[in-house]
Image (cartoon, rainbow, N blue to C red; front, top):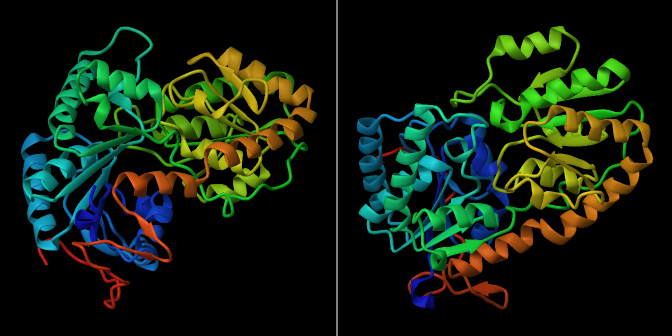
Length: 408
């Protein structure tokens, strides 16, 4: 992209205010540092998330979106409203992430004639995750609908960012997106200074799973493995972090509370993961499919061994036998066996934890990922200043970040 088209006004479109500062914080901070005016769009801002986004230097913007479910009339109306909003904000470029912001955000940006449109697909999600048996009619219809919508939207994107080869191959083979339009990131990355290595924990040995409470995250297999391990090693500790989720694979509160009552797991809910990782010996993610899971990258950065599945996205985080173990999908017995290896050989917690940190430094440094993002989207550094906008230098906007509502 030529310098004349480098964006000075940038829209980041999400379906959660929390994710803007928790997942995209380093990218937004770097854009703002380079003098870009960043509009951070979400449908569910509260006072805390508004403040956190504003602290990054971005401008929080409300817009209408139903995060889950498929209501074509509602989604179409929301897309048209979003197109009007993007036109009013006069953005030069947009980046949508999560399924609906990728689909409807990209189409809205196209309708609004946003000059540069980008999409980030961090994982293919429920619709593309193998069911493990006969596929339900509902899941099949959902996959076909999402595939069609992706085809329509991604053809209007100038660049599509994906994290792993399996997702790339699936979308390309199904004609969803051209391989030439794809950039592989290999993981969204974490701030290695913020997620610093901490001393390993070998007493008591604890296993931690942090994820949205969805069946496809392997939560049920984690609990079944805990039951197996505790039968022989009752001192082992199992912690499940994460909130209930309205997605089709979501677990019910009564089911999770029953596991707690049985004494299999502790469930603090949706909390700050960092102090819990510091108390854990091993991080576990028995997911059926991921992009490249950020939770695992964070655990690796903090020096935790990993047990995860030999599945798309998950396998990118483990060199089997070096920084952890890979197990088959939906195999709680194999998962329990991997856990027992750490119980019987606690020295593995030390050596594999150190290997995880080294691997995180090599593969998952967010600064490297951000450089890829920015270079691909056309930002070029010139000394200590950035030449962006329509052929002029744009410094930090004198206007203080403030909330913006749709239509204002």
